[in-house]
Image (tube, rainbow over all chains, first blue to last red; front, side, top):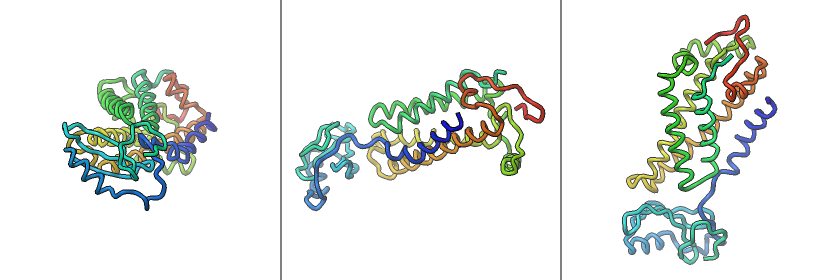
Amino acid sequence: MKRGLCLLAFSMLVGAPMVRATGLATCDSGAPEGWQPQEKLAASLKEKGWQVRRIKVDGGCYEVYALNEKGERVEAYFHPRTLSPVPTGAKNHKG
Amino acid sequence: MPVWDPVVRIAHWILATCIIAAWFTRGATHDWLGYGALGVVALRLLWGWVGPRHAHFGEFVRSTAATLAYARAVVARAEPRYLGHNPLGAWMIVALLAMIALVAGTGWLSTTDRFWGVEWLQETHHLLADALLVLATLHVAGVAYTSLRHRENLVRAMITGRKPPPRAGDVFE
């Protein structure tokens, strides 16, 4: 039992950070040099009536936290090269 | 002899399960695990008030001086065995329950319209979750060490609720 507990403690410190839950989608988006600016995405979403709270890079996608035009909370992904929506669960989305 | 009542044991394992599962999940599942953990913390605190003897926080949470004295005894390898929680384990329980409440609280807050997508709150939630992971690791290490020192299986005790009866020199609380 003690060996098991020591193994558990070790894997908690060393292994847990590696298996932490990641984003809701990933994008095949290459180097950031070819990406469109976040400001452009924010502007187009604002035009749709969204209240954009935060945009960050997650899994090679732009991850947006916003309230949409109906005031609903949304966490949406967009491809940084095309700025087209990426469906939740997509893997290495090509845009 | 019976020490840990079923509520204490079930609360312990539900919390452990919620925390581990929340680490791996996102979205609605993650959120509900957090609400579940927060609910169990609240129930555990209430149980510390109305539950049986070994569930009472007043029974095992000691003063700073007594806890430091116990810590020195651990270093000197002269600490007594406690039938309930030892003073260091007791403060770890307090720290874990508080940290779980903070992690779940900040997580819930960042799902409200007011705080949705607020960066500092999301980062705080992550940092607190990291701190919880460190505390939980120390908790497991402490359980391993104490089990080894006093030749008793504390993991089994938290499953069955039973511990070897007090021997000479043990503390009954």
